[in-house]
Amino acid sequence: MNESLIPLLVSTIAGLSTLIGALSIFFKIEKSKYNKFIAFCLAFSISIMIGISVFDLIPESFYQYFSVYGMSKSIILLVVAFLISYIFITLLSMLIRRETKSEDLYRLGILNMIVLILHNLPEGIATFLSSYQDINLGIKLAAAIMLHNIPEGISIAVPIYYSTKNKRLAFRNAFISGMAEPIGAILAFIFLKNYISEMMISIILIIVAGLMITLSIQELLPESLKYKENKALYLGLASGVVLVLLNILLL
Image (cartoon, rainbow, N blue to C red; front, side, top):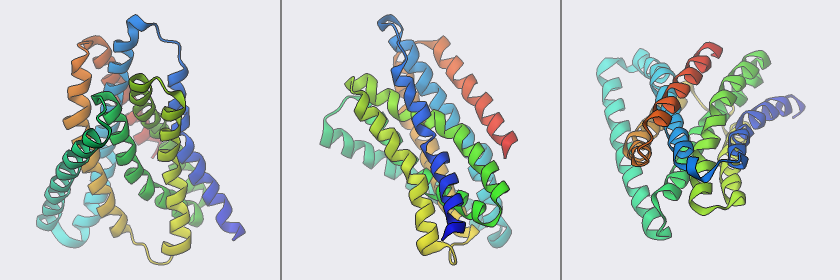
C-alpha cells in the first residue's frame, strides 16, 4: 500500500493544479475590461484544448491503435470518435440549457467541466501507473499535465464566475474537475492496475480529444467571437499555442 501513496500523491497534485487556474477569478478586473478578459480566457482555452488534442492525444493514441489495427480501422476510429463527440456535446448542451435555463457563458463553464472530467480520469490513470512503474517518469508526466491543467481551471472558473458572480461555485467546479485525476488514479489502483491496457487508454483519449475539439469549435469559439475583442482573442490563442509547445517539450 505504501508504494502506492506516492503515485497517488503525484496524481492528486497534478489534478488539483486546476485550482491554480481557478484563482484567476480573484484578479481585480475593471468592468470596462470584462469582455477583453473573458474573450482572452475563452480563446486561451480553445488553443489549449485543440493544441493538446492535435499535438498530443491524437498522434500518440492514433499511432498506438494504428500499430495494431492498421490505417483503415484507425481512420474509422477517428471518424466514429468525432461523430460521438458531436452528438454528445450537442445533446449535453441542449440538456444543460433546458435544465438550468442559463446564459451561454455559464453553460460553457459546465460543459468545460464535464468534458475535462472525462479528460482527467484517463490522465489520472496514466499518471498513477507511470509513477507506480517509474517515479521519475510519473513526475515528468505530472509536470506536463499541471502545465495544461492550470488553463483548464481557467476555462471552467472564469465563465461560471462572470455569469453568476459566485466565486465559491466557480472554484468548486474547478475543484471537481481536478479531483477526477486522483479519482482516476484510485480506480486504477483498486480495479485496473493489472488489467488496463495502453490500447484501452488510447481509445479513451481519442474520444476525449474529439470532445475537446468539438467543444472548442462548436461552443467556445462562437462565444468568444461575440465579445468582438479581436486583440484579446488573438492574444489568448497565441498564449495557448506557446503553452502547448512548452507542454510538448516537457513530454
